[in-house]
Image (cartoon, rainbow, N blue to C red; front, top):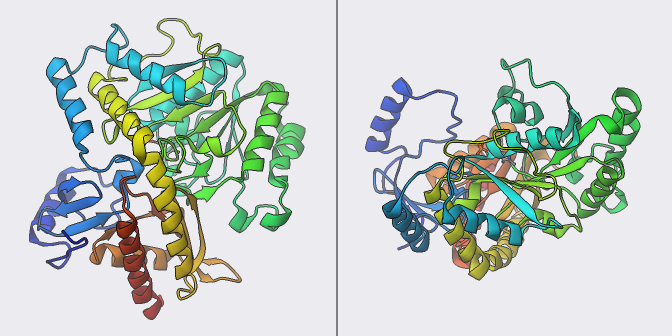
Length: 444
Ligand SMILES: Cc1ncc(COP(=O)(O)O)c(C=O)c1O
């Protein structure tokens, strides 16, 4: 089957009918960038209700790590569902949750043993990290970064500083949260060039926050995405993360690495933090861990996670079907998909970078593995953000059968299933180029 294969105008008639029904009864807060109505999917291909076939470089926001409905994952889900679907790991024990916690303890770069708290989503994984950090340190303040996205429940929302629309109307936020500049090397917050960078933006924490607002002893944790996801696929340099580890260790501050989007093989390593020489205290995981089944995990140093029974729990968290899907997912990642993400990702990044020669809209191509971003600008010198053009390119790609998502104000993210082949990567780059040509021809 050749992908993509678009047979109707988009949205087709069946898609249009469903979207109308949705508009009447579903919350309008969802960010539907374009009108895709899915019927079924397999690997990196998606079919809509009108029979159009799409190449998926969105993967349900970086979730379908093993591809849509991987047979091994479907089998694990089915077998577990036939045994039992729910028993609440909060109150009872079951083998599949223990096996998953053992597996996670063996793959995270945390020294001295790790324990897992299971929930259902990324935001819950971050909530648990916030609560654990406060509980374990007896301190209150949390530092996060501008551009960061950590979820939308009231604790993690206080950390989220990606787009005003995500916060507007929801104040007051959880107190004790402060933000620092993220090391966005394309738009260096302290005006340096990447080659001269010694992570000077980190000085803001020491020379501003710790000088004027609080002492380091009041800070429970610093929470950071090693690659900002929703914020625009911005990669923190490894030396920044290593200095951050030194800073936090020096003051007894816990370092929380949010791997909800960057984790589970996507970057060509199991976790993106493995690119740096950093041992975190807490890691949050969700999205790709269970190939689409809801699961959030807060993994912490074993000696930190000592809160007593009742301190934190979740009825559904660590659902056995999700745990079984996660075990099957991790096996597939280890067997071949992490390596595939590294290899096909490097190939795709080279393809996207080559597009810069012919497409002035692309200001920057970045990322690791199959977590790739292209930032669109109106002018490469001024770096004026091409906001409407970005939306137009995402839509033009959709009309050609390529599913991508926006990230940040003016970037496009490529977060395909990790089963993507080199040929599919070439197709994605070609179609993306065509979408750019269309939009560049009709400069907004
Ligand atoms: C880094 C990061 N943390 C947390 C979240 C929140 O995850 P969820 O939408 O599952 O609550 C996201 C979601 O995009 C994320 O990218």
